[in-house]
Length: 176
Image (tube, rainbow, N blue to C red; front, side, top):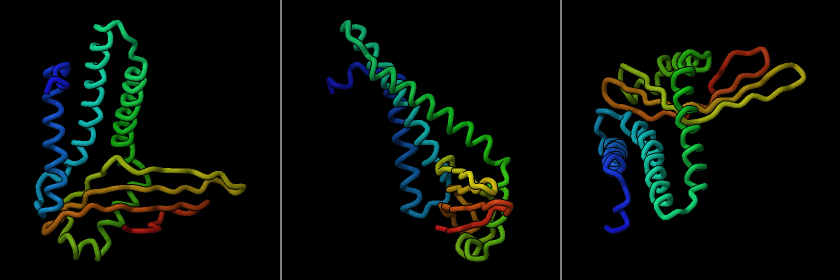
Protein backbone atom coordinates (compact mmCIF):
# COMPACT_ATOMS: atom_id res chain seq x y z
CA UNK A 1 0.00 0.00 0.00
CA UNK A 2 2.98 2.29 0.45
CA UNK A 3 3.28 2.53 -3.35
CA UNK A 4 -0.10 4.27 -3.53
CA UNK A 5 0.75 6.92 -0.94
CA UNK A 6 1.79 9.55 -3.46
CA UNK A 7 -1.60 9.48 -5.23
CA UNK A 8 -3.84 12.44 -4.49
CA UNK A 9 -7.36 11.86 -3.24
CA UNK A 10 -8.76 12.96 -6.62
CA UNK A 11 -6.62 10.35 -8.42
CA UNK A 12 -7.71 7.59 -6.06
CA UNK A 13 -11.38 8.53 -6.46
CA UNK A 14 -11.00 8.66 -10.25
CA UNK A 15 -9.34 5.22 -10.22
CA UNK A 16 -12.27 3.75 -8.31
CA UNK A 17 -14.90 5.42 -10.51
CA UNK A 18 -13.05 4.33 -13.67
CA UNK A 19 -12.85 0.75 -12.42
CA UNK A 20 -16.58 0.76 -11.61
CA UNK A 21 -17.55 2.08 -15.04
CA UNK A 22 -15.29 -0.38 -16.88
CA UNK A 23 -16.30 -3.38 -14.77
CA UNK A 24 -19.98 -2.59 -15.16
CA UNK A 25 -19.55 -1.97 -18.91
CA UNK A 26 -18.07 -5.41 -19.45
CA UNK A 27 -20.32 -7.11 -16.88
CA UNK A 28 -23.54 -5.82 -18.44
CA UNK A 29 -22.50 -7.30 -21.80
CA UNK A 30 -21.47 -10.60 -20.25
CA UNK A 31 -24.58 -10.93 -18.06
CA UNK A 32 -27.05 -9.56 -20.63
CA UNK A 33 -28.03 -6.50 -18.60
CA UNK A 34 -29.58 -3.95 -20.94
CA UNK A 35 -29.00 -0.79 -18.96
CA UNK A 36 -26.29 1.86 -19.38
CA UNK A 37 -24.14 0.10 -21.98
CA UNK A 38 -22.38 3.43 -22.58
CA UNK A 39 -20.54 2.87 -19.28
CA UNK A 40 -17.78 0.98 -21.09
CA UNK A 41 -17.09 3.93 -23.42
CA UNK A 42 -17.31 6.41 -20.55
CA UNK A 43 -14.99 4.19 -18.50
CA UNK A 44 -12.31 4.27 -21.18
CA UNK A 45 -12.49 8.05 -21.44
CA UNK A 46 -12.24 8.22 -17.64
CA UNK A 47 -9.22 5.93 -17.87
CA UNK A 48 -7.40 8.51 -20.00
CA UNK A 49 -8.41 11.33 -17.63
CA UNK A 50 -7.27 9.25 -14.64
CA UNK A 51 -3.98 8.59 -16.38
CA UNK A 52 -3.42 12.34 -16.70
CA UNK A 53 -3.98 12.85 -12.97
CA UNK A 54 -1.75 9.86 -12.19
CA UNK A 55 1.03 11.44 -14.25
CA UNK A 56 0.48 14.82 -12.54
CA UNK A 57 0.94 13.08 -9.18
CA UNK A 58 4.15 11.47 -10.50
CA UNK A 59 5.41 14.90 -11.60
CA UNK A 60 4.82 16.27 -8.09
CA UNK A 61 6.69 13.32 -6.61
CA UNK A 62 9.62 13.79 -9.00
CA UNK A 63 9.77 17.54 -8.35
CA UNK A 64 9.88 16.87 -4.61
CA UNK A 65 12.89 14.61 -5.23
CA UNK A 66 14.42 17.28 -7.48
CA UNK A 67 14.11 14.91 -10.43
CA UNK A 68 12.98 15.44 -13.99
CA UNK A 69 9.63 14.23 -15.23
CA UNK A 70 9.97 14.57 -19.00
CA UNK A 71 8.32 11.21 -19.72
CA UNK A 72 5.33 12.09 -17.57
CA UNK A 73 4.91 15.46 -19.28
CA UNK A 74 5.04 13.82 -22.70
CA UNK A 75 2.49 11.26 -21.50
CA UNK A 76 0.14 14.03 -20.36
CA UNK A 77 0.47 15.74 -23.74
CA UNK A 78 -0.36 12.51 -25.56
CA UNK A 79 -3.38 11.84 -23.33
CA UNK A 80 -4.71 15.38 -23.80
CA UNK A 81 -4.45 14.95 -27.58
CA UNK A 82 -6.28 11.60 -27.35
CA UNK A 83 -9.12 13.09 -25.27
CA UNK A 84 -9.50 16.15 -27.50
CA UNK A 85 -9.51 13.95 -30.60
CA UNK A 86 -12.20 11.68 -29.14
CA UNK A 87 -14.33 14.72 -28.20
CA UNK A 88 -14.04 16.20 -31.69
CA UNK A 89 -14.90 12.86 -33.28
CA UNK A 90 -17.84 12.33 -30.90
CA UNK A 91 -19.24 15.78 -31.76
CA UNK A 92 -18.46 15.96 -35.49
CA UNK A 93 -19.16 12.46 -36.83
CA UNK A 94 -22.93 12.41 -36.13
CA UNK A 95 -23.26 15.29 -38.62
CA UNK A 96 -21.40 13.48 -41.42
CA UNK A 97 -22.64 11.60 -44.47
CA UNK A 98 -20.93 8.48 -43.17
CA UNK A 99 -22.94 8.51 -39.96
CA UNK A 100 -26.20 9.19 -41.80
CA UNK A 101 -25.62 6.23 -44.12
CA UNK A 102 -24.65 3.97 -41.20
CA UNK A 103 -27.74 4.96 -39.21
CA UNK A 104 -29.96 4.41 -42.26
CA UNK A 105 -28.41 0.96 -42.74
CA UNK A 106 -28.87 0.01 -39.08
CA UNK A 107 -32.52 1.11 -38.98
CA UNK A 108 -33.33 -0.69 -42.27
CA UNK A 109 -31.44 -3.92 -41.57
CA UNK A 110 -33.87 -6.70 -40.71
CA UNK A 111 -31.16 -8.99 -39.27
CA UNK A 112 -30.20 -6.33 -36.71
CA UNK A 113 -33.86 -5.65 -35.88
CA UNK A 114 -34.60 -9.37 -35.44
CA UNK A 115 -31.70 -9.59 -32.99
CA UNK A 116 -32.46 -6.42 -30.99
CA UNK A 117 -36.16 -5.87 -31.51
CA UNK A 118 -37.47 -2.48 -32.58
CA UNK A 119 -34.55 -0.04 -32.57
CA UNK A 120 -34.99 2.67 -29.93
CA UNK A 121 -31.62 4.40 -30.05
CA UNK A 122 -28.21 4.29 -31.71
CA UNK A 123 -25.20 5.46 -29.70
CA UNK A 124 -22.02 6.35 -31.59
CA UNK A 125 -18.84 5.14 -29.89
CA UNK A 126 -15.81 7.30 -30.82
CA UNK A 127 -13.48 4.44 -31.74
CA UNK A 128 -12.44 3.21 -35.14
CA UNK A 129 -10.88 5.14 -37.97
CA UNK A 130 -11.39 6.85 -41.31
CA UNK A 131 -8.99 7.04 -44.20
CA UNK A 132 -8.92 8.67 -47.61
CA UNK A 133 -6.93 7.60 -50.60
CA UNK A 134 -6.20 9.98 -53.43
CA UNK A 135 -6.49 8.43 -56.87
CA UNK A 136 -6.26 9.97 -60.32
CA UNK A 137 -10.07 10.16 -60.45
CA UNK A 138 -10.58 11.65 -56.96
CA UNK A 139 -10.82 10.37 -53.39
CA UNK A 140 -11.78 6.91 -52.17
CA UNK A 141 -12.62 6.60 -48.46
CA UNK A 142 -12.93 3.86 -45.87
CA UNK A 143 -14.45 4.10 -42.39
CA UNK A 144 -14.60 1.78 -39.39
CA UNK A 145 -17.45 2.90 -37.12
CA UNK A 146 -18.65 1.49 -33.80
CA UNK A 147 -22.17 1.75 -32.39
CA UNK A 148 -24.31 0.55 -29.52
CA UNK A 149 -27.70 -0.33 -30.99
CA UNK A 150 -30.43 -0.23 -28.35
CA UNK A 151 -33.43 -2.32 -29.23
CA UNK A 152 -36.66 -3.04 -27.42
CA UNK A 153 -35.50 -6.58 -26.53
CA UNK A 154 -31.72 -6.45 -26.53
CA UNK A 155 -28.68 -4.20 -27.03
CA UNK A 156 -25.92 -4.88 -29.51
CA UNK A 157 -22.33 -3.72 -30.04
CA UNK A 158 -22.01 -3.16 -33.78
CA UNK A 159 -18.97 -2.51 -35.93
CA UNK A 160 -19.55 -1.30 -39.49
CA UNK A 161 -16.83 -1.17 -42.10
CA UNK A 162 -17.86 1.27 -44.81
CA UNK A 163 -16.42 2.35 -48.13
CA UNK A 164 -16.88 5.11 -50.65
CA UNK A 165 -15.28 5.05 -54.06
CA UNK A 166 -14.92 7.98 -56.41
CA UNK A 167 -18.33 9.44 -57.34
CA UNK A 168 -20.29 6.89 -55.25
CA UNK A 169 -22.22 7.05 -52.02
CA UNK A 170 -21.12 5.38 -48.77
CA UNK A 171 -21.91 1.67 -48.61
CA UNK A 172 -21.48 -1.01 -46.00
CA UNK A 173 -18.60 -3.34 -46.84
CA UNK A 174 -18.69 -5.58 -43.77
CA UNK A 175 -21.14 -5.79 -40.87
CA UNK A 176 -19.34 -7.50 -37.97
